[in-house]
Image (cartoon, rainbow, N blue to C red):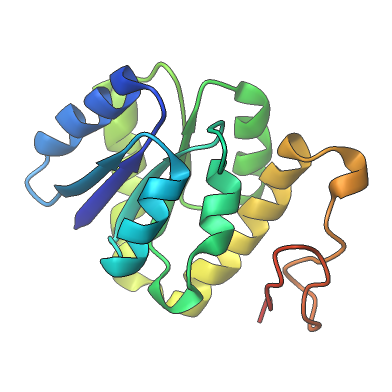
Length: 167
């Protein structure tokens, strides 16, 4: 699987790169310190797996994920030091969520979740999972007055700033 790592902390990127290099089926094809730089590279050559920090400026990980084209949506693993996001992410059971600091054993547990989902899931299934995860995570990033009024089970086009269609 081609992998892109997006984390504003050098130590975080280094840890993920070293763990990925220890896995025969993973190949790191990009590493980025900010969401804006990563977005262009992801669009140009979509990876199969994206490790994505949530708290980054100016484009946070949630907004970066929302900006991805559904037909090229990679398997997403959110990586952050904030456990408040982790609890919400696990509620929707989307790919996985790594809470910093993590060790290689925890990383491999993540891969055990990613590999079968990547092999068996369609773009539509990954998009549905991502939409649910993003809705949950967005509650922790946006102020209450900025919450979108769209949800993954809606048949309407989103009216919030993301302008996504959920199905």
